[in-house]
Length: 420
Image 1 (cartoon, rainbow, N blue to C red):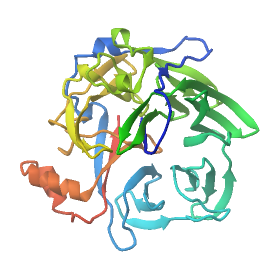
Image 2 (cartoon, rainbow, N blue to C red; image 1 turned 135 degrees about the vertical axis):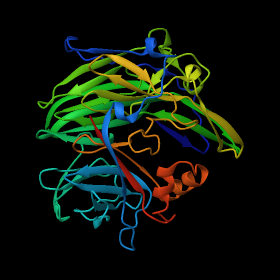
Image 3 (tube, rainbow, N blue to C red; image 1 turned 90 degrees about the vertical axis):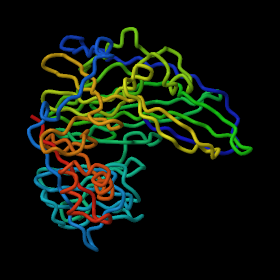
């Protein structure tokens, strides 16, 4: 979920969220039920070895040419690691961390991009496909030579993500408009060859939850924006949409169907929700983050359990008005066993840290942020964070040994997990 803050003098009423209808018109046969209600209050610590066969910690080579900025995305394709950063550069390393080259075509020319929203790597030829924040997809070959630009389907939409499957593209987007003083959000996922050849799409429309607050003589607006989240697993794309109780699938022919339905039962969210209701972590309802991962056996999900969270994590931050706020993170990770049909919430393996207990090599609790082209689960840790962790926990031999090979200015360590 993106939470947008706008400052300035604004005159708009509080906008109430209206839940969107989620299901497709397809048959419900084969649809799985994820029983959230029965799983609440029954969490446990889950070992990484229950879902994975191996984990690797890859120290990326650091020199004057290979230094990476703040990591935005990581891809793994054919034994190469691709890392994009806040400089809109993609750095390429071997799977053992040796620097290969950097890729950057930043500019305003017809064959260049201004920024990077996300990118994909073609397993077949090593080509790189970049979606910039305007929603265009720019294709380059493995040597960085320009191939083509694929324009977005809807010019007024803000494209956020895309994946390639078969011979077509699946793109997630959203569009905003004002209707009689209210902000309407249209969320969409479209499977298309080009703007003239749309295979299928799923669109929901809602009024966004919004809050307005006086700050330093002006008005701050807090708004929720939940772009659809796409993942590719084997020959199928899956996605979620904001406030939907459904996980959708797109097959190799571009057809959309319902794959899983979330059974919240008594923990279902209210039909009409303003901003304060949604962000109130003392409430007794559960919602699902649109970010998730998938392996052959499991779905890896993130729920906000609010008042039912067994181990909320408190954080102190400063608001726009400069005052310190204490907030509770009541998100809880969960795994759904697709074979057995069981949902399990993950208790924290270490106090204040969420994820799987890393029992394969004795490393840090793990939860994926990215997925490799062959289904690998990926995350990273900055070198300075590993060094600090080792200093805080000298009994953790793994952290101490890894930290001894790093300096605080080194590139991040990429963590790659091979699912069972």
